[in-house]
Length: 115
Image (tube, rainbow, N blue to C red; front, side, top):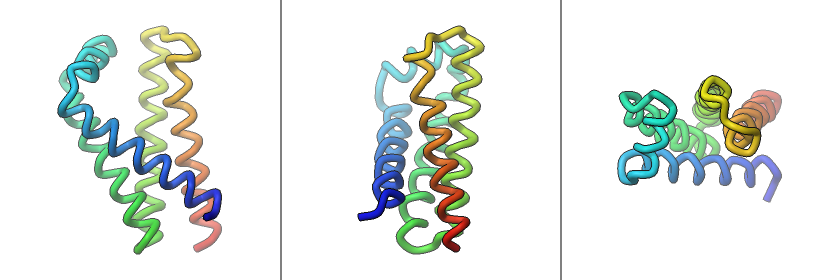
């Protein structure tokens, strides 16, 4: 199993989990209220699920779709990092968003170079 495969699995599973949790957990609703984005909870959850499916299924069957998914998730996480900065979260609270932004950007770059 290659590094890219492992990273795609990590990203796909993580975003499916967090996307679904936007629809089913009170904790996510509370977090989005804290972000000042309670009206965007379902949109973000939907984008996370679509991005995860595009990344995972695209990686298996259609590399262009995986690249689009990875870029979309990277952009989504950059916005998430911006929100964390805006509400003055600490480094530990902000780190996952920027890590996932870089992880998905890396996946996109590797896949572009290999296509």
